[in-house]
Amino acid sequence: MSRLEKFINNNRSEFDDMVPSEQLWQHVEAAITKKTGKRFHIGPFIKWSAAAAILVMITAAVFFAIAKKNPTETAISKKDTVVTDLAALAPEEAQEMNQFAKMIVVKQEELKVLAKEQPLLYQKFAKDITQLDSSYNTLKNKLSVTPNRDMLIEAMIQNLELQLNILNQQLNIIHQIKQTKKYSHEKNQSFT
Image 1 (cartoon, rainbow, N blue to C red):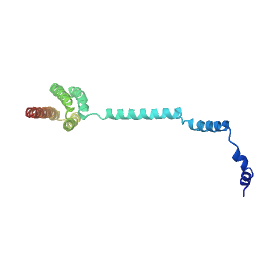
Image 2: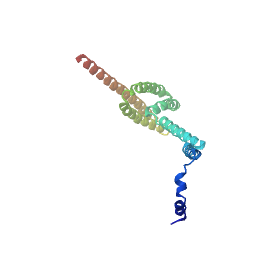
Image 3: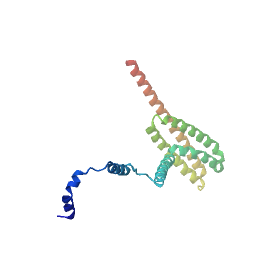
Image 4: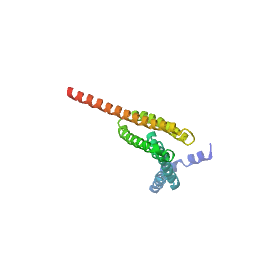
């Protein structure tokens, strides 16, 4: 038998007769609530770090959203600089190319307005125009080094005409889709 057990056995009567004082229970209760009342506080460094991380993520998301422009927007911004460059290289044809470029920009803006209704179709259309615009830029780059400028200028004018024709066809397609939807909607209403 251990010393503690002997002490408890020898003094059992005192343990059984005595009732703990009211102050003892108050001390125990205060110690328990003191420990459970203590909350974990995030230090100011951790709070500021979390806020900075969130700010960086939002900034990155905005940056990538802005960086991911529509292809036609880039084509439109390039058209104005292309026309001014051509005025120096081919002053005779610059007027005609300038008119085509302005009409293309107007048609692209018209197409952008309609893009909200048909976003997938608009992306396909934008891809077509981007390909033609890239061909146009290739021709323009060759213009300064090629001895046969007249042929390249004619090809550039044809490219601009083709871009304008395709934009007109794309706008017609979208208008036809609208008319079909309008007609089917009117037809459905007449049956009800």
